[in-house]
Image 1 (cartoon, rainbow, N blue to C red):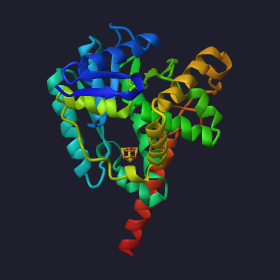
Image 2 (image 1 turned 90 degrees about the vertical axis):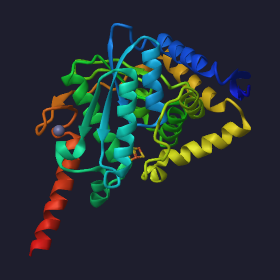
Image 3 (image 1 turned 30 degrees about the vertical axis):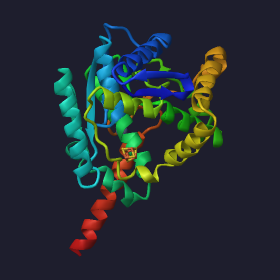
Image 4 (image 1 turned 90 degrees about the horizontal axis):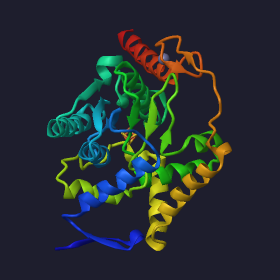
Length: 303
Ligand code: SF4
Ligand code: ZN
């Protein structure tokens, strides 16, 4: 049987044993960072991609209570979104868990494709929309924990970008677990120490049906170029990505000052009522811009 060799661990695991090995390592991360307990309900953001679906299955196999939230973003006139939604529904049926589906068009009459019309970066708007609904549904359904499928490549690329631009407030916030507050649930990233390729191997070796095509907007994402650079380094210096992120989290653990996020006052958004740090939350500002743009275009056409 062909073995899967992981250079960074100096370890070879056969295809049959790989899923167990992977699940064991995720379990270690959950315990090391005290992410959640068996009796806590977890809401996991699922996209139909390998990482979030792999995490969902791992959590259930480890005995945790995880449900999914799928956000239909209307990407590329729905084609990409429909495919990814179908994969999430399949996984929900396989695991026998709840899957909440939020359709952006029903909620706010816009889709992520509309983002270009207001000259903002699509991925930045997408991130805001995803965070908004994850927080909102988590609170409405009273989940104490939000999980996401960010893997080591994602976390290392984010760290790399934050260091290059010296984004102090983001560096303070970046960690595999962020404690909950009165307004927000605890946020956890159980795959933060698993390489992207390991997540892909897990999905393949444990029979997960995930969307193989990338989001059509991903080529424009800044994080892609950071990932390419980090992967080049990884190819020459095995394990460097893991050292980079692990040593950062270890340094943060030791230094209480670095762990302390800036204290900001939370208020209710004047439009939607969701918690925010400014009078009108970013989500409502983006929505208003897109709606105004659409209204102006309709008025122009009708003249
Ligand atoms: Fe959203 Fe960008 Fe990811 Fe596509 S690549 S799902 S637009 S964040
Ligand atoms: Zn708002």
